[in-house]
Length: 155
Image (cartoon, rainbow, N blue to C red; front, side):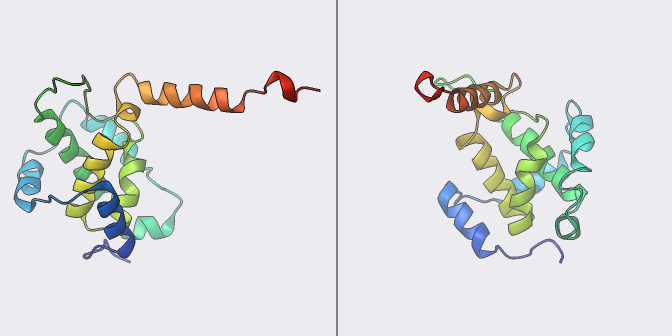
C-alpha cells in the first residue's frame, strides 16, 4: 500500500476535529526547499528509521524520507512563527515526534498530514513537545496522582 494520495475518511475526520482548514502547497514546497534544519536534523534522522519499525503495513505505506521531510518542515514552520504575547512556548523537534507524525501520514497525503500534524502539536499538545518536556512531567504527575492508592482503599 503506497502513501495515500487521497485523504481517508479517518484523515478527513481528524482534520475536521483539529480544525485544519488552511493548507498551502506553495508554503509546504517552500519549507521543503529550505532543506534539512541543521540544528535538529541528526535527532530527526536518529528517530525516523525506527518509527513503527515492526509494523510492516506502516513501513510499506509511509517511508522514512516522508516522515523526516514532514518533521523538518515542521521545524522550519515553527521557527518562522512570531513570538506570542500570551504564552512563551518554543516549538522545535523533540524525541518522539516521529511517532506522533506517523499516524497522520498513514491516513492522509503528505501535505494534509503536515498541516494536521502541525496544528495538532500547536493546539492539542503544545506542552508535551517543549524542550524541557513540561507536558511529559505534568502527565507523569497526573498518572501518579490517578494511580495513587487512597487511604480509604487500604486494607
